[in-house]
Image (cartoon, rainbow, N blue to C red; front, side, top):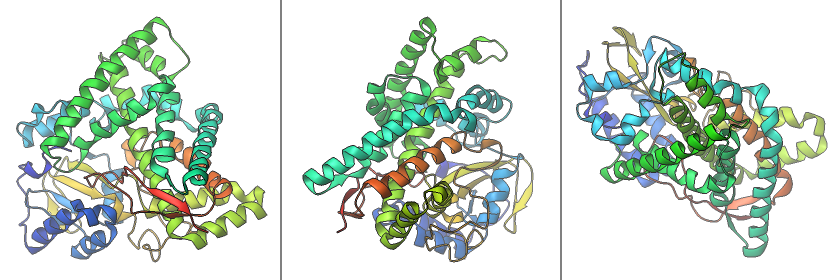
Length: 432
C-alpha cells in the first residue's frame, strides 16, 4: 500500500530498540539478497517478538498465531479510503492508490460483500469444472513450449513460457477477454500492483498510474462491447449485477474485473515461479513424487494436493497484507489503539514452527499442522483460492511427468518489492 511509512497513527506504545532493528530488517527485505531469500530475515524478525512496533506507529506481526487471529477477526478492517483520509494525507494524489480502494481488496462490508457476491459464482469450486478443460489445454501448450525450448536451446525461461503465460490465459478465460490480449493485460497488472507494495518509489507509482489509465480504458471498452454482445462469462455477470440496481455501484463491473485480473495475474505467477524453484532445489523430493505418481495413479490427486499445500506454505505468493484496529485492543502482548495499522508478514508466518515442525524444511509429503494463510482468511479470504489450487494441481504433475528434471541455470530475476514473490525471469535447464 502507498505511503505506509508516512502513516501518522499515534501509537499506544513506545518504539524501542526492536523498532529500529525491525526497520533495518525491512530495508534488507527490499535489497537484492532480501528479495531473493527473505526467509532468514523473517526468522530474525520472529526472534524480535510477537508484535514489533514501528517508528510510524504501526505493528509488524511475524508469527502465525497473531497473523491468523487478526486476519480472521471481523473487527480488524482493511486500510480503506476512510482510514487513509484520516491517517495518510495526500494519498489521493495517486490514481492507482485511489482505484485500489474501490476494489474488494480494500473495501469493508457492505461494499466488499456486494463485490464478492458478484464474482463468486464464477470462481466457486463447482464452477471450475467448466474452466478446467480449457486451462488443461493451456497447461499442455505451455509445457510443450517449455520442453521445445529446452530441446532446442538447452535452457528456457520458465517465467516467460509458463509462470506468466498461464495466468495471462486464465485471466482471459475467466473474465471473458480476447485470448490475444493476455500478454498485454499481464504487463499492465504487473505495473498496477507495484503501488500495493511498502513505500513504492515515485517511478513505480508513475508506472502504476499509467497502467491504471490504460487498464481502465481497456476495461471500459470491453464492458461497452459486452453490453452489446452478452456472453456466458464473468464480465457479463458483473455487468448484470451492476445494472440490477440493488446497490449504487456504477463501476462495479470494472472494479471487480480489475481485482480478478490483479489476483490471477500476480499471485498465480508468483505461485508457479516458486513451484519450479522449489522442485529444482529439492531434486530428491521431486523425483520421489514423480515416482509415486507413476506407481500409483489412483493416489495421484491426493499426493498432488498435499504437495501443492506444502509448496504454498513454503514460499507463499503474497508475502504481506495489512489490517487496521477498529477498537482499542492488544496483540502480541502490546496494547493497540483504535486506528493502528498492522502489517501481517504472511511469508514469515508460514515458516513459523507453529505451522509445521522444522518449518524451514520443504517436505512435499507434509500435512500442515495449521490452516494455511497463503490465501488470507476471514471475509477477505482469497476469492480465487480454488482457482489457484486447480492451476497448481494441473501444472505440478505436468512438470513431473512431461519435463526432464530441471535445475536453475541462473539465479531468478526479481523486481523491487516485498509484497509479492514475483519473478521476471528464471532460466532452467535439464538436470541430467
